[in-house]
Image (tube, rainbow, N blue to C red):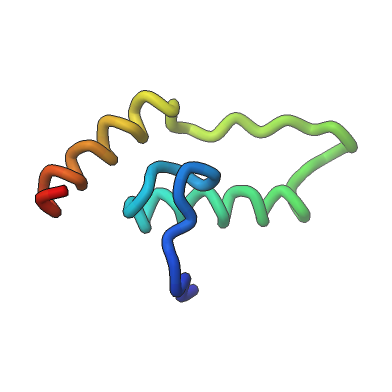
Length: 63
């Protein structure tokens, strides 16, 4: 899957392409995997963890 732009905070922290892909794939999988209306899926990463990884990426990029 090629994403020509960064999805930003809606799909994880900016520039964290791998996390953004995981979030989008998890969201799309709910179409077939949800067992009932209103089914809630808890993504296996907290926002704090994602933000820490994002800050590491920013450091590596020199941003």
